[in-house]
Image 1 (cartoon, rainbow over the protein chains, first blue to last red):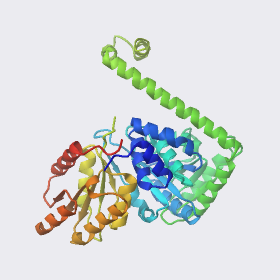
Image 2: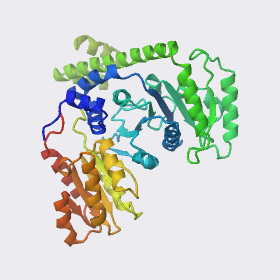
Image 3: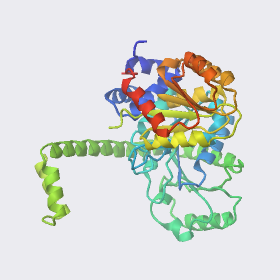
Image 4: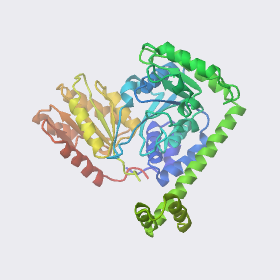
Length: 318
Length: 140
């Protein structure tokens, strides 16, 4: 069988061919030249989906809640892409991707396309090519793209740089109200979820969050007041309310606010990619001529400090 | 660059709930640097084929202990074909309690290997790696 070209695959994607979509996602994920060409073709077709990021710590019930939310959105007639991210092993570079287990019933629904991704060394809660994968699902014509991050702690905030709406999932018993006032992941929430609300202390956590957020200036997105939603993903409780808030936020950021938000995201994406290319280039050149290793030796021998060495590396590597 | 990352689907068709073996194999392939999508127990042929399509896997490993393999495996192949995935485009292997007499018919069906009890995980890892090294280019 002849191997299809990227252009053929993109044409098939545009015609609704799910296998072509799956193949393109692989090329994009592997960041091959073909994958980049595919993205260049798909990008102008994207921008119509409501992209929703769900993040929270490992075990907070993200997968179960994502599945419950997907079912609710399907009841409301939305088609959907789901990107579920699990960690890559720092030792073997392998990964065990288990998010489909919680989403079994969605597999039978042709309007849902679920793709598992491994982080492949990225640290911000996403995989390096997540934005590209979301672009392809968006270009395929999905109404909503849900992105479930890898289990995130306090500082994995990348999802907010690509989602229209960011949902932070918390559970009772994982910290006091001072945790809620800390910088980082709590700040990126457009919607805060207290999941596993059938557990003890769920009301306490919700009250603490309300106390913190009601006193906070609602300046982040032109007056949006971050709602606090109690859910029990496994029981389906509160999920309809969460879907209502998603829709409200989508309408809130429609128009001017959305353009501003997307401009900020575009700047972030552009600079992140440019930074990566410059760095890859620098590493390649200074590795080839031995500058990098020589500086490493001198730092280890305490002959030079890391800052001065970095200055030298950048200067000599140009 | 991980552009030759091997993606594997490990699935259990049918009704038996014993997934220890499937998990051991999934873990061994993970430790060998592969990306393993584990879908859990009680999968229908359609669910397996759909997961294979959406995840665009290179390899599909089926685990079965119930004795229903001659019933279910052909249906998995059929479900794959319905989605445009031919058995020779992916590496298919199976493990579990499968009588010797059934091995040849399953190979005819498109299964490259059947691993019985006592197979070492090293053997399965080597088998997948050797296939990956000689497979033809897939897409541009």
